[in-house]
Image (cartoon, helix red, strand yellow):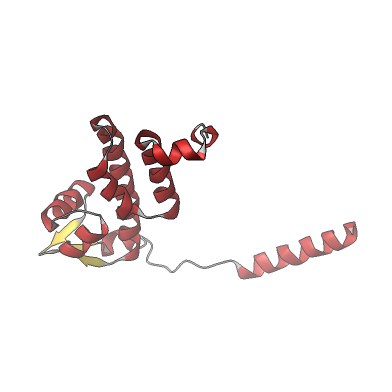
Length: 142
């Protein structure tokens, strides 16, 4: 919010201000690869601590999505998704997260299986009755 009070001209020309503004924009857009690219173009080495923390957070978010989206994924593909340069980095990261490594693939099937082995159901009958009740109440108010 404080950066929004800074004039547009100063935001565009001052690298110490423009970089945080761009990082915030990249995060809002979901352009995580651009966050990685800013690591190479920092205006000051003091920014590195914040960018590393941001990268860890971004990787954590991506990893949670990968765990829910895939039953298994190859190491090189996981590296690409997690914004690592090599598959070895992805293997290290996956092992730290407790992912099951089978050959050169991570397997998530055990994490995605419900322990009761019963499909989740939506209580449609109850929801329909509740919505009809709300509609009647709104009609009476109007």
